[in-house]
Length: 149
View 1 (cartoon, rainbow, N blue to C red):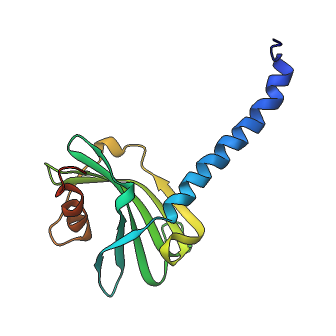
View 2 (view 1 turned 60 degrees about the vertical axis):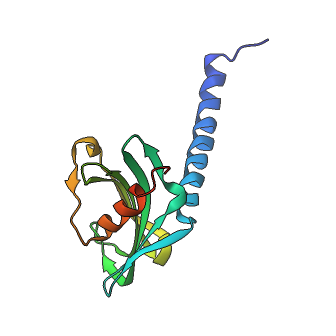
């Protein structure tokens, strides 16, 4: 069996990297095409969650939510957006949550162009209390009320 020498390896690695990035992008796109269930709706926004995205680890739950706005709004980078995908970690016992990741889209339902994204590198230490009456409180109830989830 022949082994790849350094020059051949340097040609193969960029191709392999592109394939891996493409695969990762396809996984991200599949989250946008999730089956969304409504959590809450008011005149400012509609909030949804993806039941299939829920991952249970001990007393915490990880899940994706979708926020749809009735009209475009300026995002944190100055670009207009109309929907927002957020990855959450919710602690079922302490009523605390953390936003892990956010992606802003120029069209409703997480469609169109992603105009901004933020991943919190310090998410493990950024817990915040869940305020009663918020869509995060409704999400926590959905995530934590089923002992099997």
